[in-house]
Image 1: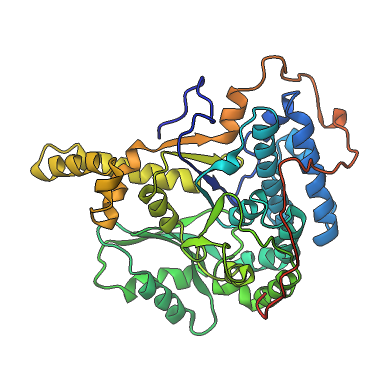
Image 2 (image 1 turned 45 degrees about the horizontal axis):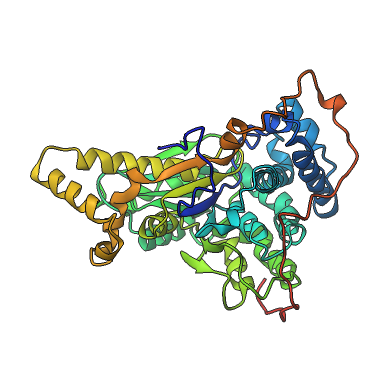
Length: 421
């Protein structure tokens, strides 16, 4: 993927989208390096201590995230709430560093989107809901979600030739589950790829339900994966508990800034209607990542800033698409020449509007991608040297509230709670 050169500022006026990552098997990224920069260190420490407080209040879990980061440790899978809090705090810290230290206000972006937990972080970063209120929801549900991960696997289900019919795949999952909700689609990554979570033997039975898809393949991922965004979470009443939590959450009457493209609905959401309905579906409906990718390429966005510790899913999805487009357009055939011609046309907005909808995918190789934590380290203030010789013992453990300078929740009243969660 193209990456911002070391001398370029993020305030160059390039139309930008923000992409927030969610939970993964490793959630530290380069946070330790960010905390070693003197100018960044207070901001990172404040958000980590804030997350410690939220873990204690809503997950009844005593944590020391600063020590985790300094020692280079990821929380064990049984402490899923701690990982959730770490990701949330890290992404909020990165945004505040960009704004307060570098004067980069990423809220001027065209729109944002987030994978899984990332969508909740995008809502908080956009001032639509307070970070405390929205993080409280996944923290309160974390133990049950982690317990459900004990006997399930995450699998990548893909077809090398044909597109995967999402509706049929969802029905196939229901069929092999035998009404036990043992398998569910967690995300649609691309037209030919989906993430499925469930019991391994049930997932392995899926290909027999698609005899016409001869190239259908299944690859299991290692690690422990709580089955969020699938019907499996209903087994422990996660959806009902989330409904009660969200019902009392206060949202801004103004939409988030930037607008949030929801991976729940596959479109811009939260600007009208009841946001609780979207968050209700967030727990047990699949993430529509491909819709966000296509929306990005159909817009005038030319840069995607990836926020979070070592983002993976979203950048790799864009990278695979860019590689596929490049491979197809570089072929010295009549078809390849035709694709190159169309590729040049989609850079002209007035003409692109007249082309078939998916012609915008040809823009993928030209989109610039910036990993924010890398950019912040590449642009660390020269007058702010890296702190050497420090350890967990040298880090102050005094609790501190995060700065309110980045978060600006524009609440003008309390919407009436609906019957949704």
